[in-house]
Each structure stands twice: as structure tokens, then as C-alpha cells.
Image (cartoon, rainbow, N blue to C red):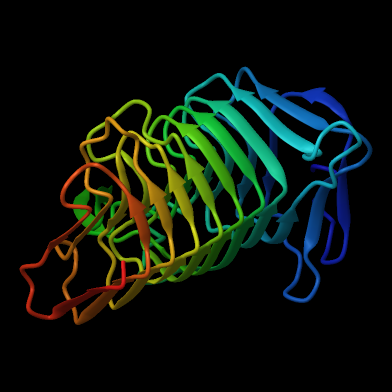
Length: 316
């Protein structure tokens, strides 16, 4: 058994300084009032993964806080500085929930910087499992192969999975109560921040710069508000990406406000694009008080074919 198998809420795991390979935590559980804390001990813990498709992986973990104190030479005491195989810097999966990731640097990944979702299978779906309470903040994520932050499944209409010899369409588990704030995201191959299939989202005070460097179709925006997502997206700064600044396919209630957007001078994309193509219920999307600098026209584009969906656009 791993040394942390007997840990309980309030305990702390100290990561020694120096360079190391990937770290995986399985079946680790704190409590609602006392999280288990994973933190660097003294100096910087640097992870370079040459064999496995992740730097740090949390699988079926609950009530966990991964953070770093920093040291005299670096603001970030835990650094995932390279993931050579196709994979994420930090992976949160397999029914993990009640997770906080803070003050970590992630860079040079072939996949996302931070990946947070539970994939559906024959025993796990939106019908029988919801992942609750995620807080991802004050991280520095840069030079990623795909997304900077990938939160929630994009397969909101389901995935085809064979169960007992029968092909079924299974909906992925929803993330409930997601906070993404004060992160710095730079030079991503695909989207800067992508949040999908998530309810009650607060996404604010993030800085996204130079996203979508690979200019991949349908994977090229600073902030993606994906299908099945609602919440508030405000006070973010999105600068000089090669794609759209904000794409919105959210539902029920979505607020996009007080964001600062400056488009790359050669960018021919819409700054804010909102569509109801993934919405099947009454919805209000409010786009207000955003400051947009762009040479491209239009700056804001709405695609609205569903009479149950209302868009309010003002004071931009």
C-alpha cells in the first residue's frame, strides 16, 4: 500500500525538493472540514514526466488541496516543467471531487496544463454521479500543447460506450460548483481556458494571453464557455490570441461581463461569439460592460435560432 493510504482529513503530504518523475495519488480522502494538503516541503519540487502521460494525477481523490508555498528563488514551489508523453500536467479524474489546485506552475505539456473531468463508463454517468466543488486558482500555466485549463467534459450530448454487448449513449458526469480565478495562462496550443458541462461556475480575474497558437479549428479561443455550462464569467483579461476571445454555448443563465479583450492585430475572428446550438431549455445569456479592442467587424456576434433563448447585449 502507498504511504498515504492511511491518511485522513487534516493530514499533510510533503513533497521533497528536487527533480522527480510523475506522481499519482489514488483513493485519497480528507473530509469536508479538513482537507488533506499536498505541498512542497522546502525548496521547489520539479516534476518532469518522461514515461507517463501526466505530471501529477489525482484519481478517485476527495477533499484534497494541492498547493505550494514557493521559495526564495521561485514563486511556485511545485512546478510541472515537462510532460513528454501525450498528456496533462495535472490530471483530476475517476470521480475525484472537492479538489483545490493553487499556486502551481505547469508548462511544456503535449496535452492540457490542468485537466479536470470524470469520463463516463458503464457504471458512471450524469444519471448517478455528480462531481462537486472545484477551486483552481493562482496557477501559472503556459506553453501547453492543447488547452491551458480543460475543465469538464466537452461530450455534453453523450459518448457511445458498449455495455454488456450493447452500444449506449452515456452522458458524462457534471461538475457542480466550479471556481476558476486569478490564473495566468499563456501560449496555449488550443483554448486558453475551456469550461464545459459545469454548473454554477465562477470564472474571474484570470489572465489569458497568446492562446490558440496552433489555430486548430473549434479549439481556438481564449475562454470557451462550453455546452451544459452556466455561471458568471467576469473581470478576465484576454489578450492577443490567435482565435476568438470568448465563445459561449452555455445554458440557463450565463453572464459575461467586465472582461477586457484586445485582439491580435492580424486576427480575423469575432471577439465574443455566442450561440444557442447546444441549448434545449429556457436560457438567458447576458453580455455587458466588456471592453473590446479589435479591427475586425463585428466584435460581438450572436447566433440565435431558439425562441427559448434570450440574449441581452449592452454597455460594451
